[in-house]
Amino acid sequence: RIMMTSAGKRWKENAVRLKKGLESKMEMIESLVKENPCYRAGKKIQVKGLVLHSVGCPQPSAQVFVKQHNSSDAKVCVHAFIDANTGAVYQTLPWDFKAWHCGGSCNSTHIGVEMCEPPCIRYTSGASFECSDETKAREMVTRTLNAAAGLFAFLCKQYGLNPLEDGVILSHKEAHERGKASGHGDPDHLFRQLHMDYTMDNFRQAVADLMK
Image (cartoon, rainbow, N blue to C red; front, side):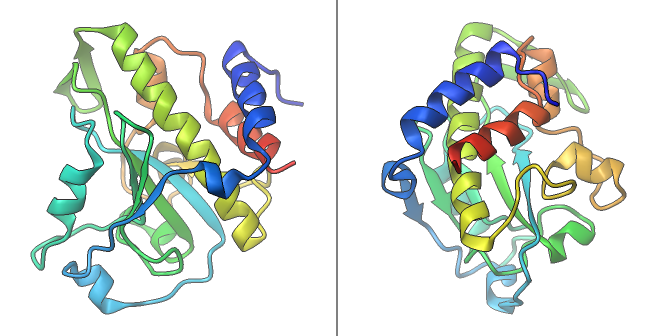
């Protein structure tokens, strides 16, 4: 049984408010990156799960990343970015396209979604960062996590996935620990260094609550 932290309780309260009409309440903006070689390859996958990422730099605007990825020179590609200022979801690939988001076998099985990050953090080494305004940073991370929970609930319903089943919803860090992704620590590093009580376990529970 998962112990519900205060973060989990807040997510559960959000689930009660959002579970009806989930799709209509979610702001999703189609922003397909048709110039990206990944999009042009057009390879399909059987969706078996979802990976939650964060972008790894102090940039809250999803549109910045959409523009970067919509290039014939792009080497990476994800299915969506979540804007840290608004919580809006910018869909960059059809959900059943193979994306280049994990650097491992999860690319062939899992949808990849990136959360944009607060502008008030500054990376110092690897996944370590300093933050000039933790209150603002926490607000932005909470906003993107809530949007991600709604999006993941929608996608789990669409593809018949159980968010609490082992390996269905992973962070990039967890996917790496399973040998299915490159060596990144996101987005778990945000929770830890911003002293938040969010975890991937209570995120998965929040997604399940939204689906009830």
